[in-house]
Length: 445
Image (spheres, rainbow, N blue to C red):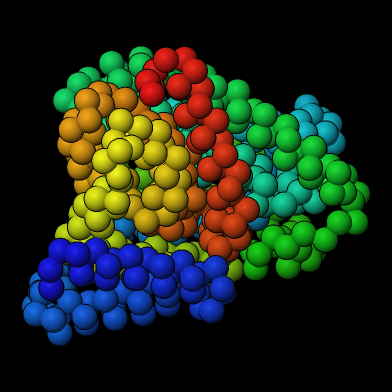
């Protein structure tokens, strides 16, 4: 199979998966495995790769996401235990006193927590810090979880531009400059992004309020299968551990701090947290089994989705399909528009983010576009800035980024609803930042 056919096969695979997800034909894990299996069979039947090579691609892909799947299982269990013991109920009451029953204040607080949580540049850890803390507040005020995710991903997209953020480091390595030097160039655009993030929180907070959100609201909102209403008051009282509140808060803070600063696998940190939480709050194997079983369903569903996404990523990345897709996309840029390359790729970055994961985007597409731009006298730095700034906003709405599944799983939102709700808003935010980059003279036309 030639390079063009490989690229077309890749586009067909991704389009089919996105259609299946958006049309709600099947659950994500089945879509990833089913469609990718067909792609693998095509690669084998055409003689492009052997059965063993396709198997190796799958193994490498699953290996790349197994830590995220493990992280999800044990983080869901840990935060589920903290919910069961009643820790979040007391914290929510304190938060509610701070912001009152102000829906807009809760939205702004979400943005602030997400920005602080993303200082370490880790998408998974930010979701784990922000969503479990804020989702109970959203439920109490009848605010939609899709709004929580919208505010989170916008704030995370801005903070991901820090020099130790993955996309910034990848772009700097391709450009052959220091990550800090690249960051200094795009600081004005990041400041605009921060302002837009808080504006996003205010706008959607007002929208929630207008839609009827608030204390004692009769608004009906779907919070997924893991809604806490499934527990009766009697069951909640049985599981609550008010006398151990201080211990649970200290344990949770220790987990979060260790998550940010310790050079250890995040899933192992949550494993230790689960062990301590279960031993102290629910001694005895019978009770511990009951707690674990109560949180097994959502953990298994999302872990299976993440592992299935690994199959998809393994075949498309390791087979070289994504690289060929990048070449094909670059070839569609007319020579007459070559000097406007940074603007073109900036505008198209959000749609491209749904197709390319971070490595393929920056290590596959960026070098090709830099080479194309050089033929028209385009500064590689400007191409890099346009790509990293505009793409970053869409990182955590992309179905090819494992952390996205962690976020939607924690919030109890289906990924199709997350993409539908965020796509055009995020695209608009990225274009505003691009325009500001042009006005500031960072990107020349």
